[in-house]
Length: 124
Ligand SMILES: [Zn+2]
Image (tube, rainbow, N blue to C red; front, side, top):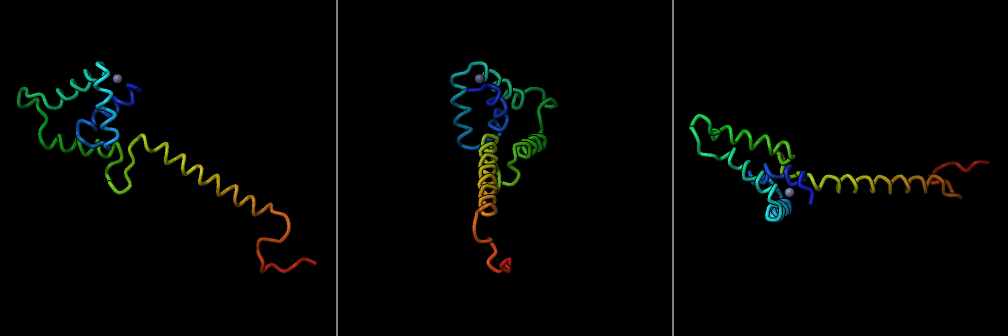
């Protein structure tokens, strides 16, 4: 498992702004990777540490940060949201569909015999 990918997920994971699959993957990785677990604990402390009151993030700052994270990972509109790991898949599907369309159009154009448009006047 790539630690860098897990690190990217740590902040959304902390805020609960993450898919079930990604959450399970992060948790599984943290159990087996002390380095990432240490980073996650440090992240958690930096966000939740009860310290001097003025050093603590206010509820509004937390809400703003959460909103920024949600926007960053594309969760602003839950209807069309994609997790980062789903995007390459979507691009691959779109590319395959486009390739299929190109092949189909090319096949019709280069097909021998009748013209594709039946209303076309026959050439003499
Ligand atoms: Zn790791």
